[in-house]
Length: 122
Image (cartoon, rainbow, N blue to C red; front, side, top):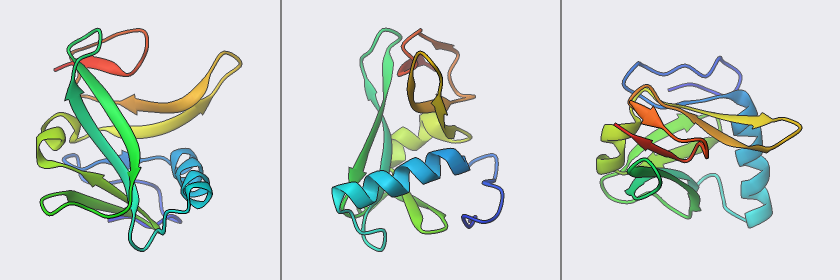
Protein backbone atom coordinates (compact mmCIF):
# COMPACT_ATOMS: atom_id res chain seq x y z
CA UNK A 1 0.00 0.00 0.00
CA UNK A 2 1.13 3.55 -0.55
CA UNK A 3 1.58 6.44 1.81
CA UNK A 4 0.52 10.01 1.17
CA UNK A 5 4.12 11.13 0.53
CA UNK A 6 4.88 8.52 -2.13
CA UNK A 7 3.44 8.56 -5.64
CA UNK A 8 0.00 7.01 -5.49
CA UNK A 9 0.72 3.71 -7.17
CA UNK A 10 -0.86 0.36 -6.50
CA UNK A 11 -0.57 -2.90 -8.36
CA UNK A 12 -2.44 -3.09 -11.66
CA UNK A 13 -5.17 -5.01 -9.82
CA UNK A 14 -5.65 -2.36 -7.13
CA UNK A 15 -7.20 1.07 -6.89
CA UNK A 16 -5.21 4.28 -7.39
CA UNK A 17 -6.03 7.65 -5.80
CA UNK A 18 -4.20 10.79 -6.91
CA UNK A 19 -2.80 13.32 -4.46
CA UNK A 20 -5.41 15.90 -5.58
CA UNK A 21 -8.21 13.46 -4.82
CA UNK A 22 -6.68 12.54 -1.46
CA UNK A 23 -6.51 16.21 -0.44
CA UNK A 24 -10.24 16.66 -1.24
CA UNK A 25 -11.15 13.45 0.59
CA UNK A 26 -9.22 14.55 3.69
CA UNK A 27 -10.88 17.96 3.84
CA UNK A 28 -14.36 16.52 3.21
CA UNK A 29 -13.87 13.84 5.88
CA UNK A 30 -12.86 16.51 8.37
CA UNK A 31 -15.97 18.57 7.48
CA UNK A 32 -18.21 15.51 7.87
CA UNK A 33 -16.58 14.53 11.18
CA UNK A 34 -15.46 11.12 9.84
CA UNK A 35 -12.51 9.71 11.76
CA UNK A 36 -9.71 8.49 9.44
CA UNK A 37 -8.88 5.75 11.96
CA UNK A 38 -12.34 4.19 11.66
CA UNK A 39 -13.97 5.55 8.52
CA UNK A 40 -13.05 6.07 4.92
CA UNK A 41 -14.17 6.65 1.38
CA UNK A 42 -16.45 4.02 -0.14
CA UNK A 43 -16.21 3.46 -3.89
CA UNK A 44 -18.78 1.28 -5.57
CA UNK A 45 -20.72 0.42 -8.69
CA UNK A 46 -24.47 0.03 -9.03
CA UNK A 47 -26.80 -0.78 -11.89
CA UNK A 48 -28.33 2.16 -13.73
CA UNK A 49 -27.21 5.33 -15.41
CA UNK A 50 -27.12 6.10 -19.12
CA UNK A 51 -24.52 3.42 -19.92
CA UNK A 52 -25.72 0.58 -17.66
CA UNK A 53 -23.57 1.01 -14.53
CA UNK A 54 -23.03 4.02 -12.28
CA UNK A 55 -20.18 4.92 -9.97
CA UNK A 56 -21.05 5.45 -6.33
CA UNK A 57 -18.84 7.47 -4.00
CA UNK A 58 -19.57 8.32 -0.37
CA UNK A 59 -18.11 8.25 3.10
CA UNK A 60 -18.55 5.32 5.45
CA UNK A 61 -17.90 5.20 9.18
CA UNK A 62 -16.30 1.74 8.98
CA UNK A 63 -15.47 -1.02 6.50
CA UNK A 64 -17.83 -3.93 5.92
CA UNK A 65 -16.82 -7.53 6.55
CA UNK A 66 -15.80 -8.48 2.99
CA UNK A 67 -14.51 -5.08 1.79
CA UNK A 68 -11.15 -4.66 0.17
CA UNK A 69 -9.38 -1.87 2.02
CA UNK A 70 -6.79 0.33 0.31
CA UNK A 71 -4.63 2.60 2.48
CA UNK A 72 -3.24 5.89 1.16
CA UNK A 73 -1.42 7.47 4.08
CA UNK A 74 -4.20 8.44 6.50
CA UNK A 75 -7.02 7.81 3.98
CA UNK A 76 -8.70 4.44 3.60
CA UNK A 77 -10.76 3.43 0.58
CA UNK A 78 -13.36 0.66 0.92
CA UNK A 79 -14.56 -1.38 -2.06
CA UNK A 80 -17.08 -4.20 -1.82
CA UNK A 81 -16.23 -7.46 -3.68
CA UNK A 82 -18.87 -7.04 -6.43
CA UNK A 83 -17.80 -3.47 -7.21
CA UNK A 84 -14.13 -4.46 -7.21
CA UNK A 85 -14.77 -6.62 -10.30
CA UNK A 86 -15.47 -3.38 -12.22
CA UNK A 87 -13.06 -1.07 -10.39
CA UNK A 88 -9.73 -2.92 -10.23
CA UNK A 89 -7.05 -0.91 -12.00
CA UNK A 90 -9.13 2.28 -11.68
CA UNK A 91 -7.72 5.69 -10.75
CA UNK A 92 -9.74 8.21 -8.73
CA UNK A 93 -8.73 11.77 -9.55
CA UNK A 94 -10.07 15.22 -8.71
CA UNK A 95 -10.24 17.88 -11.39
CA UNK A 96 -11.14 21.55 -11.33
CA UNK A 97 -11.87 23.35 -14.58
CA UNK A 98 -13.74 26.52 -15.46
CA UNK A 99 -16.83 24.45 -16.28
CA UNK A 100 -16.86 21.88 -13.47
CA UNK A 101 -15.10 20.40 -10.49
CA UNK A 102 -15.31 17.00 -8.91
CA UNK A 103 -14.02 13.46 -8.68
CA UNK A 104 -13.16 11.72 -11.93
CA UNK A 105 -13.08 7.94 -12.40
CA UNK A 106 -10.40 6.79 -14.86
CA UNK A 107 -11.41 3.18 -15.39
CA UNK A 108 -9.69 0.81 -17.83
CA UNK A 109 -12.54 -1.68 -17.25
CA UNK A 110 -15.05 0.69 -18.87
CA UNK A 111 -15.63 -0.16 -22.52
CA UNK A 112 -18.03 2.76 -22.96
CA UNK A 113 -18.86 5.79 -20.83
CA UNK A 114 -21.24 8.70 -21.18
CA UNK A 115 -20.76 12.45 -21.08
CA UNK A 116 -21.77 12.77 -17.43
CA UNK A 117 -18.67 10.82 -16.32
CA UNK A 118 -20.57 8.83 -13.70
CA UNK A 119 -21.97 6.09 -15.91
CA UNK A 120 -20.19 3.34 -17.88
CA UNK A 121 -20.48 -0.15 -19.30
CA UNK A 122 -17.93 -2.91 -18.99
